[in-house]
Image 1 (cartoon, rainbow, N blue to C red):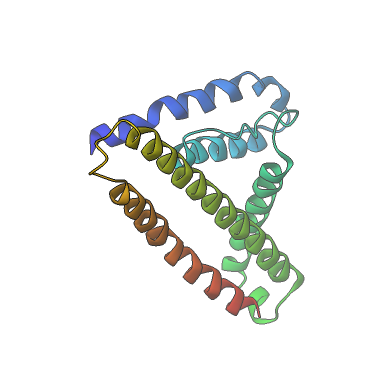
Image 2 (image 1 turned 90 degrees about the vertical axis):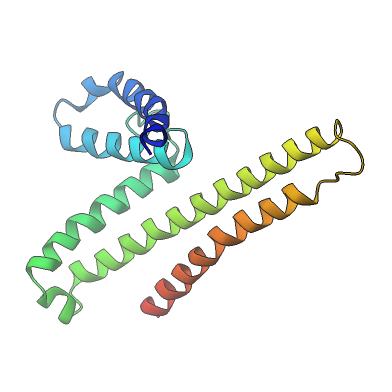
Length: 170
């Protein structure tokens, strides 16, 4: 298990290194810097690369919107937990929370599925490249079925989550 954890360190270090280059831009907004750095570090663990949201000049607008939505959702979650009447009366704060959280979840689902497709395509390409050098009798069904199993294993819970979140907001 320690080896698995160690494998994340290089990607986290790259995210920190990239963010440190623009840290001086956050002298008056250190919370913003920490939020974006945390997002970049977590993202680098999940997807093996950093979106670089600490550097607004080069960051993808979708990634920046996700950070904004997630920050607002978690900030409002704190308010709602300490003032449950916000939820009971469906206040503006509660409605903003639901909208922000839904947007953040949608981004997460989309990005996860996008990365799964990329992984499946890479596995398929690797299989095609390796099958050309294999004995013709071995075939490529093993890797194809492995890719299908991996994609299905991940898509199923994501679909359930999507159905649950859309049912709750309907």
